[in-house]
Length: 172
Image (cartoon, rainbow, N blue to C red):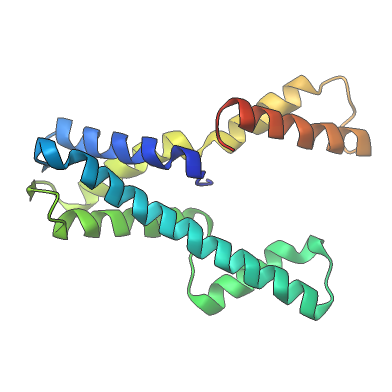
């Protein structure tokens, strides 16, 4: 799962709306937008931390003389050193941060549900918006059936097609 900056406000809005609609928390009407912005800030900070890890990874690749093919390996090392969670662990970390925020926020009047209920409902909303990479991959491959997979032509067209689909969906 990947967190895209463009879906952050949507996720925030839907999490607050879902938790309010299902009676898990109470937010004063005038403070709903503030609560949504606070959830967005948590996700944006995660993306900022990830970008710092990416920058450190690029610098480490350059220092070590590695090519870009080892980016993910070095990124995992950099993330471990910094105590940064990647992938599904990162999403779990973000959800935990969001729940902690809901418990202490001045924008939230009352929380009525247990952490595990809040976590599962928040995860359901996030999963719906973050599992788009698999859909994009399937759609791109279906558009490129005329090309043989594994060829350089396929790789080039695949990357272009994925970029077009992401742009059409407003992810980038």
